[in-house]
Length: 230
Length: 409
Image 1 (cartoon, one colour):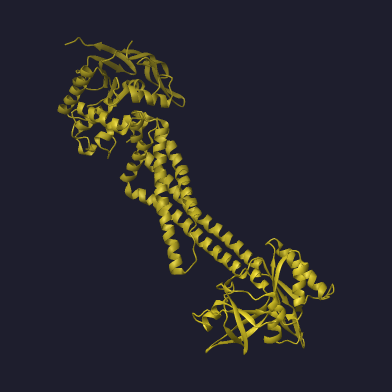
Image 2: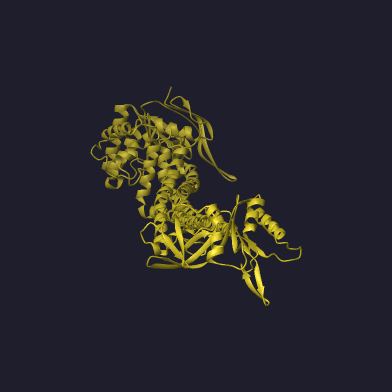
C-alpha cells in the first residue's frame, strides 16, 4: 500500500453563484521514499493538490488515504494532529517565526506534541545537525542567510520524523548555488532516511533532482513520468 | 495535548517583543485596578471613621431633653424647662421594655483645682449606668456606686484631659480635688474616648453622682430635676420602639393632653449617624463602580491590542497551525497573553492603588483603609477582564484558515 492513495480527489471553490474548479478529480498513488516534482504554470492546481495532500484543506470529492488513514473526513484538530505527526512543510518564504531562535523554530512542532523541554531540545539539535546547522541553534532568522533559513525550515519538517515532506517552491527565493545545496540536502534525506519528498517547482533544473515528475495544467494532471534510474 | 508551560513561554515572548505596546496596554489595567483600590480605600476609611464615632458616643443611643420654657413670650430652647426628673429616668428604665439602661444628666461648668493647678471643665451629675449607656470603661479606679448616688457623696471620676491638665503624670485615684471649692475624692479615671462626632473633646469631663450635682454643685429650685437623660435601647432595631415607649410614658407621667405639645424632646443620635454611614456606604459603592468603569476600559484596551496582534501575527498563526497547533493551542496562547497583560497590570495596579491611598492619607490627611477584600476583588476582576476580553481575539485567531494565514503578508 502506498504512502499516499488519492482516489478521485477534486476541489471546487464557490464564490456565491460562481463555482471555480481548482482541481479536477485526480487519482494518485505515491509510494514511500519517492522523490516527486510537481510542475505546472500558476493556477494549474498544483498548490491546491499540495494543500489537500498536506491536510491543510479538504477535498470536495474523493477519498484520500495517508499512511493508511482516511484523512478526507477528519475535523480541524484531527487534521492538525496528522500534520504534526506525518507531514513536514517547507515553504518558498521559509515561514520561520521571526525574533525566535533557530532551535525554538525547529522545536515548534514538538511543542504541540506534548514532549518535555529536554526531549524537544535534544531532537531539535539532532535535526539541526542533519541539515548542517550545528552551532547556529541560537541564531535568529534575521541573522541567518536565505539558505540557512531554509535549512532551519527543513530541520523543522524533519524533527517529528514525518514520513512525508511537502515543499512548495523551496528554492524560489534562493540563488542557484544555494538552491543546489538545498536540493542536495533533499536528495540526501530522501535516499538516506527514506523520506518521501514532494516538491512544487517552476524550474526544470530543480525538477531534475526528482525521480518522478507530475505536470499540471488547468487543474488536471497532464503527465506523470517516472524517470529511469540513472 | 496542550502544553501549558510552553504556551505561557510563547505568550511571554510575544509580549516582550512589543514592550512599549504591552506596557501601554497594561497601563489601562494599572489605572483601573489602582483606581478601584484607592477609591474603595477612601470609602472604607470614611465608613470606618463614622463607625468609630458611632461607637464613641455609645451605641443605640437616645437622648431625652427637657422641654423649652417660655418666659414672657420668649421661648428659651430645649432643656430650659425643668420638666424631667430622676423619677422619670427610673420610670423609663422600669417600664419601657425596649430600653436597656438610662443615665440621667444634670451638669454645668465647674472650676477644678488640684494643688497649684486649675482647670475649667464640664461637670456631669449622673448614675453608674452612664458607663454602660455610653459603652465607656475605666482605665483605673472604680465607678461611683448606687450608694454614692443615694448618699450624695462627694466622689468623682475624671476624663483623661482633666487628668492631664491637673495631675500630669501623677495617678489621680485617691486624690482630693476641689470642684467649685467643694472637695471631691477621685475614685476613677475614664478611658480615652477622643472626639465626639461634633468635634468636642469627650475626655474633657468629670462625672459625679447626680444627687451630689443636684444638692451641692448646681443647686436648683426644683429638687430632683435633671436636664436630660441618655437612654440605651436594647438593639438598633429597638431604637424607634424605645423612642415611642419613652414619649408615651413621659406624656402620661407629665399629664400632657391630646392636643398639648410635649415638654420634652427625644433625639436619636445613632440613627442620624447610621444614616450618614449608609450614605457613605453608597458613596463607596459609587466610587468603586466609577473606578470599575476604568478597569473595563482597560479591558477593552487589551481586546483592542489583542485584535491588532492577531491580525499582525496571522502568518505566525498559520505556521503554528501547519506544524500541528490545534484550535485550543492557538486560543490558549492568545488568552494567556491577554491574561498575562491583565495580571501583570493588576499587580502593578495594586501597588499603584496602595501608593495612592498612602499618599492620600499622608498629604490630604484622609483616613483611608485598604481592605484585603478590595485587593482580591480588583485583582480577580482584572483576571476576569483579561480572560473575557482576550477570548474574542483568541477565538478569532483559532478560526483562521491555515492556508490563508500562511499566504498573509
